[in-house]
Amino acid sequence: MAINIHSDYILRNLRKPGEVVYKIPTGGLFEYVSGANYLGEIVEWFGYALATWSLPALSFAVFSLCFIGPRAYYHHRFYKEKFNDYPKFRKALIPFIL
Image (cartoon, rainbow, N blue to C red; front, side, top):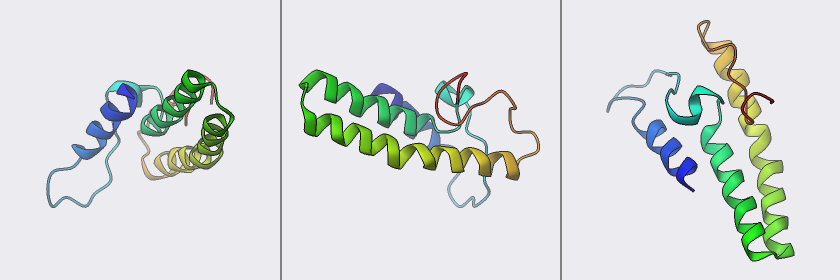
């Protein structure tokens, strides 16, 4: 949950009021992945599924991964296309792997 809250904080404060330009998020897990907010959400739901040990919670976590995972990939691709100086080592969703 902390990953999710911190990542959303970074995204909310990325632009000043009235700005409409795209910017590269930095700080926190955004140093390692393009979709730090998505990673936080997925980890949060899998943690909930583990804590409750229930099939419905696990189903929701898997659904979240299947729905949010591709969004992270497309955001990552967008950032790489939009910014020439986008960090080359940054991954889409899973640090150092994917």
